[in-house]
Image (cartoon, rainbow, N blue to C red; front, side, top):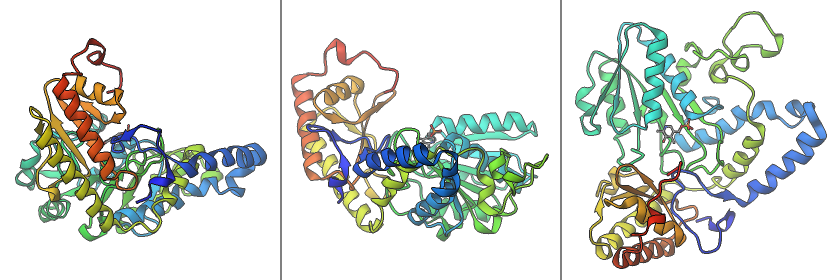
Amino acid sequence: MRKDQFILPEGVTYLDGNSLGPLPKAAEARVAEMMRSEWGEMLITGWNKAGWMAQPAALGDRIGRLIGAPEGSVVLGDTLSVKVYQALASALELVPERKVVLSDTGNFPTDLYMAEGLIRSLGQGHALKTVAPDEVAEAIDETVAVLLITEVDYRTGRKHDMAALTARAHEVGAVVVWDLAHSAGAFEVDVTAVSAEFAVGCTYKYLNGGPGAPAFIYVRPDLADRVHPALSGWLGHDAPFAFEPSYRAGQGISRMRVGTPPVIQMAALEAALDIWDGVDMAELRARSIALTERFIAGVEALCPGVTLASPRDPESRGSQVSFRFEEGYAVMQALIARGVIGDFRAPDIMRFGFAPLYNDEADVDRAVEIMADILETRAWDRPEFKTKAAVT
Ligand SMILES: *Cc1c(COP(=O)(O)O)cnc(C)c1O
């Protein structure tokens, strides 16, 4: 749909935008320009003159459009791990009489780790309870304070029914925190329609903001002036430049800001978000389903021995497809060596992300063809493909 707007190296079929989106051409120029004419020329006056201080809210609004959030309800900053902590801390305060944080065993580990750390710091007897992904609905009962859940499973691509789980949580008086890491930019999301209290996500996966791009947090507008930020940093203060001795939370979503925003990274993200202007999310989703269906059909026809780890029903899948294969790590290294870039998640999962902004049928067919050849010739069975790197 927008392939010409990205830098994709010659000979590379990039199927890992679910982990790190590729470089938008305009981001390179935008960052260079920002460095030279803003940082270089304006120096500290850039905070006002170039609008650096307003970026976290301005870009938040642009992400809001992709997740169904109204203006002034999303702000950027920090990493997703930090945003999970903030959202969960504020969510728990809304239901002080309950002590259970419910999540699922498929959740991305950092979400669970952050919950563990927060619970320990609070010291109020909270407990993190995890159940299998398909048992979440049943486990939502009157003991649950907060449902902390990631919509799309990073390993399998399984997609939760956000509307149904949120409705179930609200029925029993629980608050929800949705992690949209693998949703924002992957398909339509509507936090308003489901009335989610909190949502968080990152901008370096399907949104293509670049490695280390800041995360986002959404707080439902009717709650934004009520929540108490656990990370009460100066830029979330009502009057940061009054330098008052104690904290007073800022207006609305601005209180979820913590410290100095990553301005260079925001310049890259701004250019990346320009690509989304005018993208029809329903059309994007239809394209994504067409690509993942084609990939599954191709692999199942030509690659004996690999098994589908993702849901077969496209409605229950995000924008990635995962296959299990015992030597999946080595196969993935062999694929990468031949220019097909996906990734691997222990113990045996090969992941392939499909982003219709820059992936098309030719990418799917090339990936299938090369994988079939690697399996048939056992090209993966070499020592150099079996040595694990630090980042898989
Ligand atoms: C990618 C991802 C993260 C990453 O968190 P960072 O703090 O940005 O490193 C967290 N949670 C989920 C569900 C993810 O998919």
